[in-house]
Image (cartoon, rainbow, N blue to C red; front, side, top):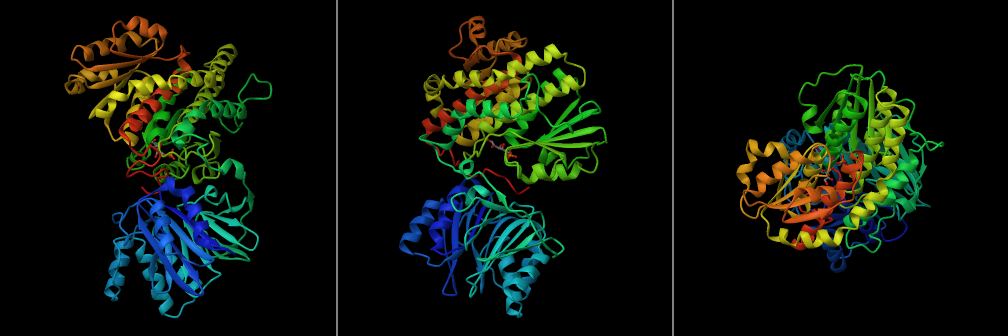
Length: 605
Ligand code: F6R
């Protein structure tokens, strides 16, 4: 979603804020803006589109001052215009905001009735107008901000900057993450620690409901009940938080290429000292579980969909999977013997977090699989399992998906052993298969040039279909999602056997159809579905292994994957799903890392 930065420094703030915003641009890039206080005077610059436009504007219209706040926006209320760009300002106060003010209509009506005229269509402007009204009534900046905060409903992370106040930023967190960085005679604020990695390695994470008074000398933090409170200062690994493309053309390319190393290192983190077992927290109790509920959004949901096959097959555990935004608005039947498992790269996805909070009082165990161990979802789970993928900056999730799958596979095997469904021998042999993943993923990545050539024709495609059976069905869904989001080609995925129940009507001459089909127990069935498609002149691209390609007969386009055990096939086949989308996007010339309308971390419902 939106990214927030604040600096109370000893040097010009704008270049530092721009640099920090650059690290947050993955959250949204509809517009960007900065406000500073210089010699007591509050001023701001805002520009539509990517950060580069704001950077250009600042060359012509510099913004001096050592104190400032900045914002990169993913539009919710109001289109991407300068008027709707943050920081919003009214009178003596400017505010940047990530989240949604749910009661903004009521506040707007109230303020309008009071004679306030609004300059934007945003919910955020109600915050500055409210605060400005309190300032006009004689409240101090701290009192005015606090009074405004008490009137707000919804989810937000906020930073306030005031005219005449060179040494004050007020920060508040309710629902959206926010952290404070400690410097030497300087203080910083950021939506995440990555934003501040060039400035400091000392970070305090604000807790839910906290608000803070920041000055160069330090920070006073208050909890939701306005009690002053202490929050720890954590040392973060700045190197791990550094973000660069390491010579790759895009973050997505870098993150795909990192997969073998990431998966190997992550597996190492979960390997027991004796190398025979899995080092997962003892607190995880699969024996007493009668049902596993898995909830997530987008790509993380497809990881759950794959894992459902694993938990059922290897652990005999009944599994329900749900899209988070749907889950909490039906009436799921919950019980103390249920385990709820939430999967999220960011750990901040509002729908997933809301689902977690919804089930927590009703189920026995709340487990999460996350990439950001300090995230809200991790902190609010009883057991949080990090995927150890490192920062993922490309908006399209790649390495986080394969790393999520790996941790979910480990969990399924552990559940199988704990529930007596897997003998020690079966367990060790499956674990060894999992250990071979990094090597096979590297082999799959080696097919990149072939995939690049294969996808040239997609540049002209209007629609693309993806088909698969079993665990390859969620892989087909993932392939279609990746293609849609970064190349803007309309793509759909179907369980191969479902095609004849309707979607086959879509098949016409030359429609590109990707079929993921390793030579497994379902292969023959999938090939029959492929024949149905080819009989109607669909342009089939078969992704299979040597045996599968040999058995499939005459297929127009073929991509050979390594021959892999069933358990790990979805992890290995994720690579062509990613590379197909990546190269199709390159052929079409779209913005791979920052596709239109998207944001990396979706912190609004
Ligand atoms: C797709 C993608 C999204 C995310 C989804 C959930 O490439 O990245 O579909 O998977 O928004 O995000 P997290 O995993 O952060 O909860």
